[in-house]
Length: 363
Image (cartoon, rainbow, N blue to C red; front, top):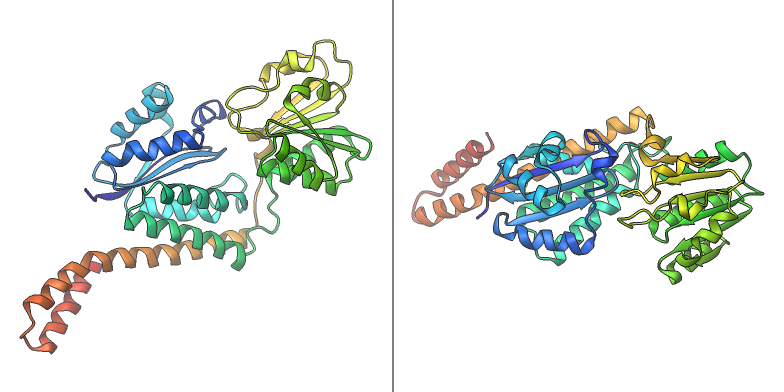
């Protein structure tokens, strides 16, 4: 089948949160996508984060309309909505985009470190599903290498703050010193653990972790010297806390007006880092309840300009390295054919023909 490298994506750059939260497939759905795409793409990889849903593929089908129709069927969204926000790229531009994503250059908080792990997870999932052809496998490894180099060789992270840090700073601005406050974390995954660490660093009065997975919630709480509760105790815990930071992978609202209670007298600061959102926006109609979601929190965050420039140079180097590999792969069968046909020919003449062939392909 083969074909060209193709990218289709819906990201924070063009798409509001209300649409992005409808494009968050869980692990099982991503595996299903990788399987169903086998008929139209030799290589395929799905990257899904709070800020982006992206498909990378090696495919003869680069018709954006066909891919948009496919996504519309998968996510039960109107074709017109996806056509408005989706962006596509083909060939080297698609390869460059993945390298920039892994480098943190396409993140809203430029240089944020979490994206590299997310790219790595997408690559490993595609590898386990046997969904990678040589082109996309090599590009995936190049992206991971790019991300590692950017983090070790540049200052892009200096001055850039994580989503967890920004969330905790927001709570501190709203509540003042946290040493006598009770903060509840809803979630038990990687982001919840980072948030818990930030709160522990600020000597929060009491930290409570609530999660569907009781054991993981207990582990996150223990590392941050806090307490843990099950989801069945969420409403009670909310009644006694000053703030809640939500960061689960649930596709549904876990906190709404009924969870908080309409007769609540204590002020409540809510932060929703989840996509899809964990907190029903309608809770702001309750008195004394404030809510900030992910897009509001990260608006206007920036990283050091010198780090961004250095990261861009690394992306250029790794892209050139990948493109060179692709060209060599393209020309290898032609060289092999020349060698077979010229076994008895003058070696110098054969060498000259191979050099001209390489130069012609590179051009």
